[in-house]
Image (cartoon, rainbow, N blue to C red; front, top):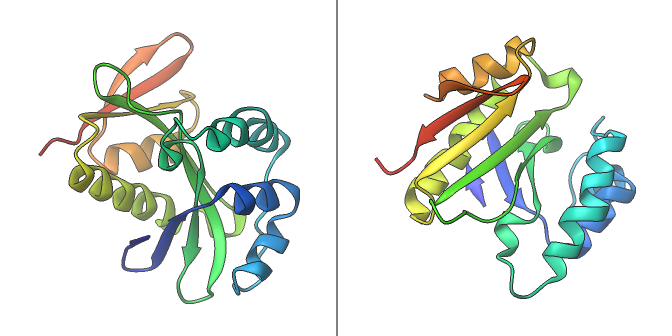
Length: 168
């Protein structure tokens, strides 16, 4: 588990991720958390069901890179979002991350804080040299989260690719 000033960030087990995909409120109840407004969109659900769960079930894969890391707001003790790697680090020791915060908690610095906590964990973990994140050019909130965490922008097709060196 990763702890920041206002957040707990924890990876989900296979069974927890499956429950989260079916009904996030059941996961919250099962973990003894406050039932929140946390929900997942259809694209995220499909990614969990068709990509993450099969890879998480494979004992040859590192489970920390094939699961959802839930973001728990400490004061409310509620799930308010999640982070997820796009697989294990590649041959260049790079890995991509995605993240999201529930609508009711946006614009309060939670995404910046959660991503910052994950970056600190990666720096201590030492398996990753470069963290990548992709966002749409019109997603100013995500661009702000990335730049506040020290990411540098480059282009990738229609979207923007951001890079962060996590070796220092």
